Image 1 (cartoon, rainbow, N blue to C red):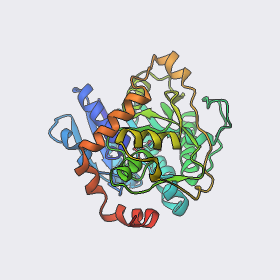
Image 2: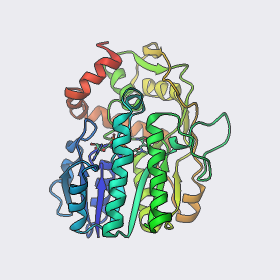
Image 3: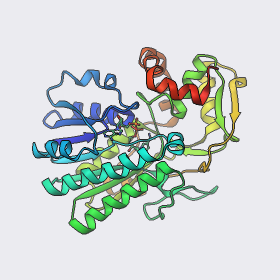
Length: 335
Ligand code: NAD
């Protein structure tokens, strides 16, 4: 089968490409990625020599290019390509609408025109908005996105749903909680905190630090997508999450403890506008229908991830330059 992975040079996409290239040697994995600031082909060095992997540099909004990829034959699409950083969506929402909504529509049109066995949209629990102290998001929870990022992802989900209802496109949508693991871009919470701690820089924590996220190791997310892609019931949404809820402050303290750094490095900063208080995922449907089980506990996963950042300093130090450096300086200054 030809499996088109869009956004395969980003954090989750590159982990997924590795996973697929290793597991399915008879399938062709085609990675279509625009290589924005978040795309990094270095993540895929090991795949370059594999005969079942190929890379196309291009934007999912480019209809002509997308058509040309589908004309060569695509059996399954897994769409990771997105602008993904909430903070950036607050300062620059336009590009989120362009890639996340309009780009998705271009892919859906091509999937409809040329025909596919399955179109899988990689969405997020953020489309559900925020939770109070109790309760979990189920697939029935109404969409109530609060940031331009989550609004763009929710819009894309609605388009994907509509292409199934209107044109019979065989789709699935996955809505996963926060991921962590190797190749996570340094602007996101866990890598940012590890890198600041290693350099004895202040660790900026939004508000009171008590916002809660439900963390899942990226490998467990990849295994869930694999199951949904092959066995998910057509037209269905599947939540993905491992019941590892932690406050941001707990995450930061865990990282400091693991690295032997003092908690005095924690610096509370002005809260993010529209900051969702709590996310928690009910993944019962995925567990019972498809037999998914996460392999990682948070404690083993976070330790392994910290080790990865220690062993791959060259990787993140190279990223801390160029385009990202401009954004990073603006957010965190020289401290
Ligand atoms: P990322 O920002 O690390 O990677 C995004 C990738 O998409 C990059 O390689 C980038 O170059 C590429 N891209 C961006 N615009 C593109 C365009 N117009 N055309 C082609 N490629 C383009 O993101 P991530 O954290 O790996 O997230 C991947 C997907 O998973 C996103 O759709 C995101 O919404 C979703 N998701 C992420 C998380 C998380 O915790 N990171 C959780 C749930 C869902």
